[in-house]
Amino acid sequence: MAELRPFASVDLTALRWTRLATDRHEFLLQSGGTALARLDLAGPVGSLAHATLSNDAWTLKRGGFLHPHVTVRRRDGIDLARLQAHLGGGTLSVVQGARYGFRRAGLLVPAWQFLDPSDRPIVHIEPVVERRRLAGGLVQVDPSATGNPDLPLLLIVGWYFVFLASFEDETVQATAAALSAVS
Image 1 (tube, rainbow, N blue to C red):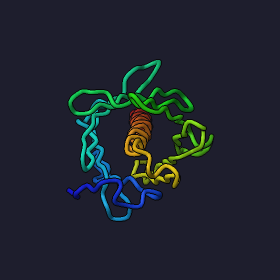
Image 2: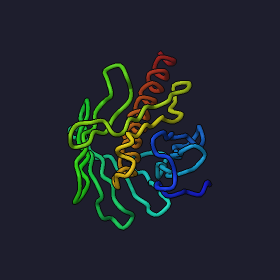
Image 3: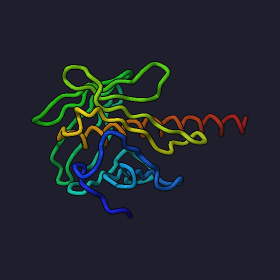
């Protein structure tokens, strides 16, 4: 596995998430050839995921049905942030910190954006799909946000959300194809 470097050591304006293996749910966040973070599901079912950075480790978990949310905790169980999500967006609230808007980038665009408190887009995450499977994602960070201490949290929570949405879509498509094949 690639050694993870601190976020402050690279250019953060153009990043990418890359799937490590087509049969697993593991992703690596990179700037150029430098690995910054890793996100992987804890098992074949469920939504528990582990995020690893050069100097920290978190767990992420989706909860709720009618009011879905994502919680981010340090491995010792202390809450870091909570994303309240609904159809077109939501809000990421950092514990003892800022609140960021989260919304779709457009009606026909599958990308998502985080907005600063003045509603300016600061992070843009766009999934890349190959053969109906999530292969990775392109990430653009506004230069004004590269020094934001919450940036790693925004990048990881945003990707986790995009990944879960894509995984649900893949599951629905596979189920529909299986039902079509037997009928």
